[in-house]
Image (tube, one colour):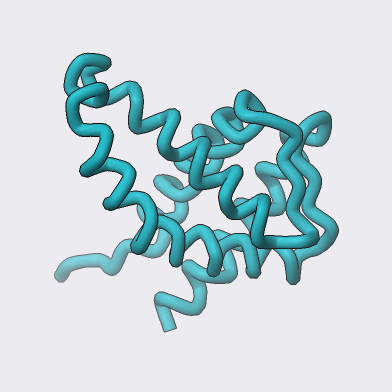
Length: 116
């Protein structure tokens, strides 16, 4: 049940992030936001580790800041695969990934199971 709530909240976070970045990120409706969450999760599991491994040297030189570039590239990849989700460029994708990370952090805190 917790997974379903997190999934729905992540869809809401994607929709809200798109609303905050109206100038460069466009999401048609909540259904497409949920589809973005699914494709983003798949891309984070499959593509992101491969990119991280190939870019270890530049990530070390930039003290980890290159991971922000990888996140933006993943967002642009999701833009390519989801028809109702449009990102106008790299900088919009970077902003989208930063804001979405903040929302996901809040969702994780809200849905964390309490220890007795």
